[in-house]
Amino acid sequence: MTSQDPAGPGTRAGATLVALFLANTLSWGDRALLGVVVDPIKRDLLLSDTQMSLLNGAIFIAFNLVAGVAISHWVDRGNRKFILLVGVAIWSIATAFIGAATGFASLATALVLVGVGEATVFPVALSMIGDLRVPAERPRAVAMFQAGTFVGLVGGSILAGVLAAAHGWRWMFVMCGVGGLVLMVAMVFAVRDPARRTDGLSLDATADGDARGAIGRVLTTPGFVPLSLGIGFLGTVGAVLGAWGPAFLQRSHHVPLAEVGAVIGPAVGISGIAGTVIGGVLATLLVRRRGSARAGLLVPLIATPLATPFLALFVFAPTLTGAMTATAMMTFLISLGVAPCFALGSDMVSHRVRALASTLMLFAFGLIGSAMAPFVVGLVSDVLAPGYGTESLRYGLATMIVTPAVATLLLLFAYRRLTDLAPRLRDPATAAVFH
Image 1: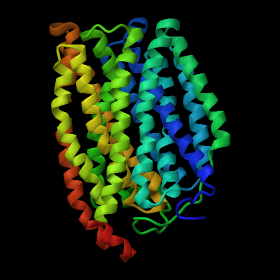
Image 2 (image 1 turned 45 degrees about the vertical axis):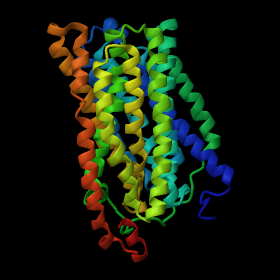
Image 3 (image 1 turned 90 degrees about the horizontal axis):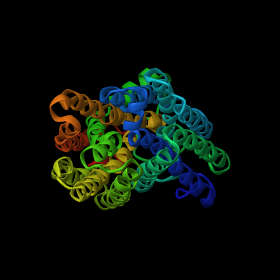
Image 4 (image 1 turned 60 degrees about the vertical axis):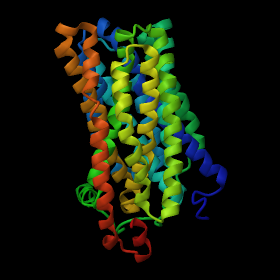
């Protein structure tokens, strides 16, 4: 095997990377479905904004993240292809069963299973990418994988709006669940589990025999915690757009249900894909040019604070055109930094805990971005609803304007802390790359 293709023949490695991209696309596409049909589900099941924010945020994310930590320990030791296939099957079947929900409890149960199934994708992907690509190439590979997030959000939003308008939200979930099972069958033939490699920017590679010890090792890595928290605050913009963007457009800009996905999808998707890919390429160039792994963090450190005025414009723009223009700009700027952060975080630790490290980063991403942020928006919306009516959601969204600044400060702290890594690296030849 060559360093360029550790998984074997190029077509095999390429097919695996494409399959990982499609799995991520499917995962985020399914997550987008509920956000598009918030109002129809609220009416049919008699739920509040707070309950919907719990369903689309805290409940889903809590089980997704807890399951992810356990699964990641399995991923670092087990057959990654098998784990991924089981995950796709679980969340696709659970997505179909959302269509049979009769109330809060049954809807929550189905979403918990979706969250558990989707918890397999990220640790499997970052673990495999670490074996499919050499360290300097990983930011770009992670960026291509992460681009599936926005492809899924676009496709899921558009598909959900069209299918829900034509067949109702229940059948929309059933059809999307069946589509996931079709992809799972294709992945049986496309995915290959590559041999695990030990090169790269890794810390002490002694075996971590138990999950608690492994978690402790990862969390004590200098810079890892602020990096993960920064990733969490980076995730608030995308999570809130997915959970509340369609409802905001329907309530404040009067966009019809059948059209809401087509309106918000391209603004988020095209700019998100462009930002993710460009961010990965820029980070790769910076790492090569400066000979420093932490150089990739310069991308979010510059781009993230620039998103703040566009987030404010999205919330308070008087016209739909202004809101969508702001959405595109803030999504582009935020997405520039996501792949460099995740790529660096997985390179900061031993290959033996790479999946666990990626899941802990995702834990922060999900807890802060996907759970807390949508919940805060929904809660504020409910509290202000008696005085502001449908416009209360606008002021709930306004609470997120400070999050890019918080993310920037955390990433800056992580950038400075990464200089402490060099003495802890076992191989002196790799130490200099962090300076």
